[in-house]
Length: 417
Image (cartoon, rainbow, N blue to C red; front, side, top):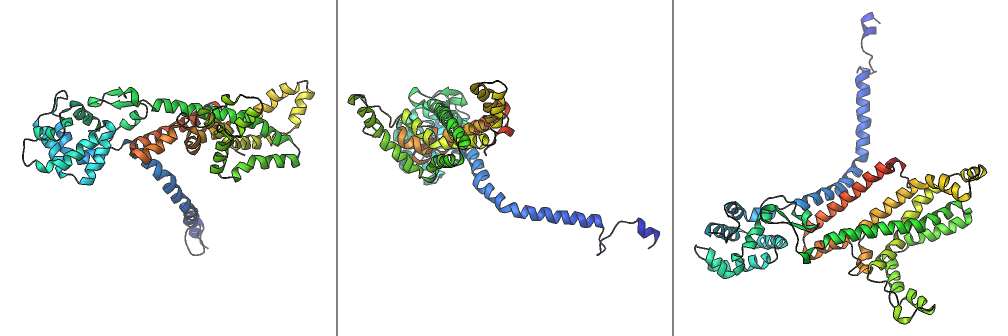
């Protein structure tokens, strides 16, 4: 072998430089790994990223009304906003309605009705009657069709929809709305319900989390410290709810908590006057009781998984050094269980804040939460923009909760098992 060949690049058997061959090999390994995770990646994109992106888009989308009424919004810029519009704005609205598809007019009327009640019937009646209008002027003829065309407030409400993207749904979700020229105003008093719902949802979630912690911590401690035979039996009792249908559990509670139910009958048998039977169904109390029972295992299991890893010798060592059992528990045992407490608390709170089925069945008027109104708007009023905005607010609330948890406790300390 010559001296020049000894100083050149190392080659593989097929004559390819070794460095190039290694790089190609690494690329093949990376490509193989990427192909293995592609199905999971596609599944996550379809089931999580796309719906979340759609949720964001829907919460600010206001394109439809701008696409159907382009001439109206263009002419709206020339209106003074204080008096009944002049003929050009009526002509623009007439032309837009004439050009629009019947289905689009229906969808736009539904959207406009969210801003001011009455738009839907106004547009539908006008669309039916406008065939009789053969030529301008349109102002007096449209007002003859429906006198709401002469109401300044209806025209002013158009200014809230003049842009293809809006934050109006987010304002509606906190009892605010756009006024003329997008000034922010309070909703009328009889429509201010969402702030109350947000407060109630947070209160229920917080109380359920506290109740689950108070009830679950001792149970988790028993699970971690009892002999294996007894702890297995107790673990079965904890897991039984997971093996039972959620609907069955809720219905069972409805049977137990009603006025003539098991709980009230027992209290009456113990001496409670018949007329003082406790109201525990279709109210705030019923929601708390049932949600606490359903979510209790979500608190017990993370705490138990952490307690199981704590050596019993720690407590004995603390007591041998002079600490009382209660002091040893507080200073030695309790701090080591905080990762499990944090994980259980955040898990229960997040599940509770978006709960739907239990408040719907046992909550009644006083126990319904924000999740019930999201479903209401998606199924009944078809106000998907408002429902999406409330969903996004919930999502950001949970992210803020994670951020606070990370700042206070540290996300690295969270242990699920």
